[in-house]
Amino acid sequence: MEYDFDQVIERRGTDSMKWGAYAGDVLPMWVADMDFRSAEPIIRALHHRIDHGVFGYTQPTQTLRAALQDRLKRLYQWEIRQEEILFLTGLVSGLNIAYQAFAGPGDGILAQPPVYFHFLRDPVQHGRVLNDPPLARKGDTYEIDFEQFERAITGRTRIFILCNPHNPVGRVYTRMELEKIADICLRHRLIICSDEIHCDLVYAGRRHIPIATLAPEVADRTITLMAPSKTYNIAGLECGYAIIKNEDLRRTWKRTGYGIVPGVNIMGHVAALAALTEGQEWLDQVMAYLQGNRDFLDQYVHEHLPGIRMCRMEATYLAWLDCREAGIPGNPAEFFLKEARVGLNNGPDFGKGGEGFVRLNFACARKTLAAALDRMSAALHK
Ligand SMILES: Cc1ncc(COP(=O)(O)O)c(C=O)c1O
Image (cartoon, rainbow, N blue to C red; front, side, top):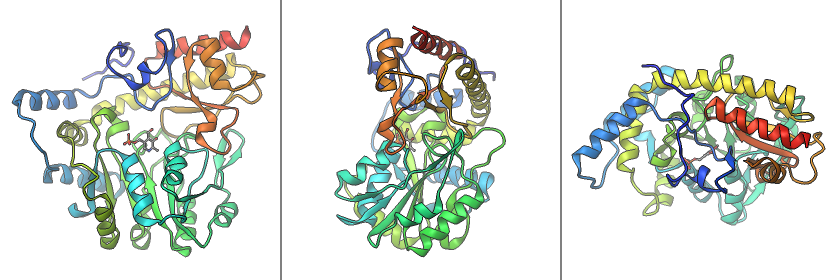
């Protein structure tokens, strides 16, 4: 079927985090979910389950595990066993299990800002020490400064948390980059916790490579976090998974999460299965639409937002905008909220290198995106 992503769906009054955070006249372009209806097979499967009317405890089925196995094999030639899949209600929980399972109080956690804030705040919240060599800005994109990366590792660093594709800079790391990362992590005996939640949202010309697929010895020290939540816009249904090949790591993971990590949500389970088995048609169409939005945004920024530069995007629907040359008085996110009534993510929340930047979520109808950009342009030209 053909999906209509131009349709504007009212989300105010639906307890949406994105739409409920600001006053009614603000266009919210921040938290990472889409304003689109999810795939019909997912909605159908949920209806079917609702109609059954009994919503007792649920366990992840072999069918769901098999669907994930098939997908990983098809996309990445990655063979995993069913017991290597550990279910989660969300990947932030997965990150926090990793911080506690594989690092003790005072141990170091390595991350590369600017990056998703749960990589930065949560380790510190748990009494771990953040080692945060920033990504290097190169023109309108970012690269890893491998010397700086390795220098940031201390005798107490235990985990590297990789964000691939990277939120917010939109990079999809190449095989060569991943190999260098893996080599450094293995030499320093770090655990790699690879958050690959955005792996399906990759634009033409790039290919996602799960770091665990590089070599068995890399897989042996890697926890891969994946989920259908961002891909199919089902984040509110809370279903994700950790893939852990190493049995000892798996045991430690389970022990840490015991009694804390709930089983899967019945609706999340149903939605995940439909997504993995019947979601491709929707995904192909949404990616084409998002690519159109990305290109529209890129051109708009270039033509109508003087002094702002958009980071080159290889993946995700989260644009990283450099406002440092735009002559904005004070903080750009506050400026656009006050003067344009557009709600953006505040750059400094992503750690080092975030000052003067904002993150803009363009997973919405093009009309909504255009309206937000017109407001931002008017505010800059006031
Ligand atoms: C890199 C990354 N990890 C995790 C999450 C959130 O995951 P969850 O909703 O499954 O906890 C996000 C959401 O934006 C993200 O960008």
